[in-house]
Length: 143
Image 1: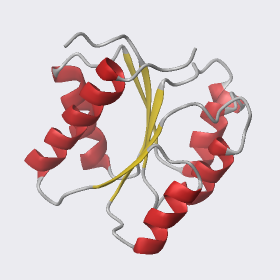
Image 2: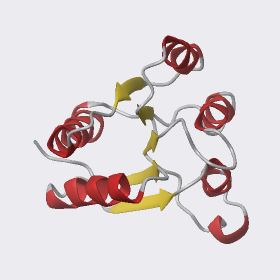
Image 3: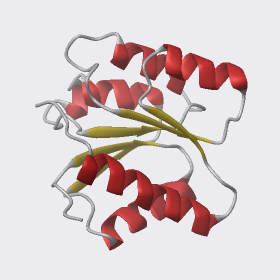
């Protein structure tokens, strides 16, 4: 599979999961740039190019955790998917929450997919690889 070059925004507050995700993406040469923010407020500032993120690129895909400090990931999702300029960016919910209400909220607000993070690091690495293969190789994205 040939992966297209992409800008990935990883919105995650767990340092171990950040490093693992970055390592898997880099190992498989799945993206040109991986941008990491550790809270919902920074995610929105990145997407809206505010403050220190004024020159940030528009991501091709966002991996979004739901349980985030400052601004909750659920609110970040709702903001993105109800914004005319951002709503076409694929949002992959990558979270530990298995709550039916979270899953329903995510899909009701146009998340592109919902993946529950496993506790096993090897399984998480496999999920990240699969998500990248799908979203960056198979899916045709709008410009």
